[in-house]
Image (cartoon, rainbow, N blue to C red; front, side, top):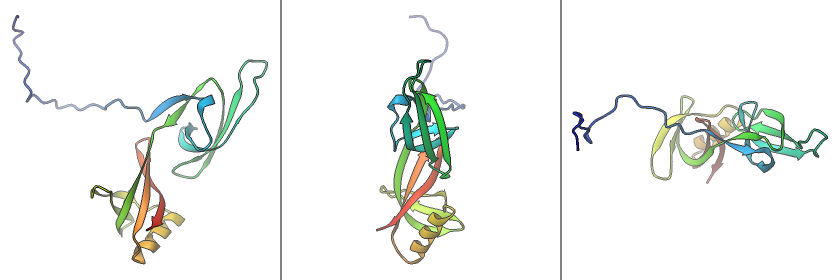
Length: 160
């Protein structure tokens, strides 16, 4: 075997790190979407509240009418698409944490493995007030963090 003059070793490192290329959404045919599922409407990750399909018209496609609520802001969005077309469905991850501290508008959270994170803000509005009130009343507060499109927000809280 000829020697190419360059030997690669296992210790060689690469200075540039690239994105893994993993997508944050998956294409799904409109006819496969279901109420209570997730879909991208107007570029926002939404939970589907209403879903209706019209009959096939003379131009060949049944239409799917979707109404969804943005999972982070609560804003309502609507869209209509042919049932055979694809819509993007956001990949979502839901994880529960115990609130360890509330300070300067940020939460200190611990997961089941004991890992601590301090990068999530106390939510605005009623949810944030409720988390703060429960924590200050010495209740054990569990929060649910929803991740979609590389964005994370606290979306629910309960006392245990």
